[in-house]
Image 1: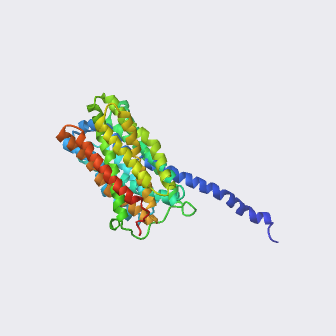
Image 2: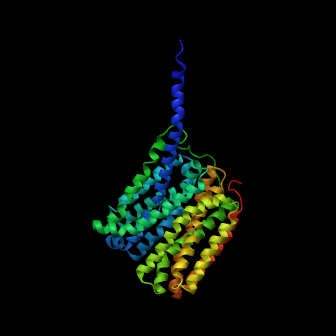
Image 3: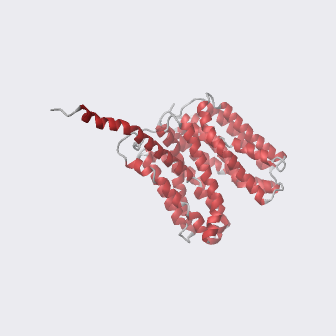
Length: 410
């Protein structure tokens, strides 16, 4: 005799009922993983910047060696980011991002346990290698797992990245003071990097299901042979040049204009604070617009207006220039979301992301160096800011080229 119909249909019915819940949990887990990875992508840099003097004293670093340490991030992002496409052709993106976070944990943990300058620099490079690879992978992960929410998720992880950088910069010294050592102020953040690994473990171990870890990518896309690839790299690089120059020198500009050091620091922090809602809104706005040209032009215009204001009235209009600069630096989240918009395939996305960010960070490294050199030579800010205006004009031209609806695979 055949079993009752209800017996046959119950398992199927239960599976149908639990499938949406499983998909929801899987989506939430991956989103948490992306946001936690992003949260860690600047912490190792800004916490070191806040404690650089203590690290120099503790490790007896020369001025030249301290310069190497501060220049390492952009160089590492360029060098190690370039290997990300090779990695995802051999391993799934989920496994690669876990390996990147493990490298970050190891680098952050070991560098605070050593008294050797060489080991400190080597392990800092290891941590930066993990950050560089994760930088490249995030646009790919967003595209793969959230294809209909690319703008929203890109905005969310950009905010997470910015928040992590700000919190680490503000908290590193208090943590070091509380524990009586700069090593605690740097090493404490490795715990957060460990937490970033946890959401990815069930993803990479799952063998089946909607949110199983994606397979390694096949095929090879060469952005260096395309106009859109070069336009993306120049746009990303010139906006990052402005960002790093701002982080390095804006507080000094305000101090030179008559502000107290504490107030100058608050004005610099204001660039980040105002930039958080801009970073959240900008990618979603870019996804809704039929053309990116208005955004490119508006952001560049605000950035240039801020620079002109800093030349003409650096003290009297400081708050206005900070707000305009913060909005203008919305070019960073715009560049990140545009990487996904200018590629048709996952292979194209990771290749374009690697080329854009690797070359872009090489360009960005010029920002604080050139601004600092021009400031030292001229003793004022007009020429350095003129250099930043020229970079913003180059950014505009590259941005208008990026705004054209072309794809790197074409």
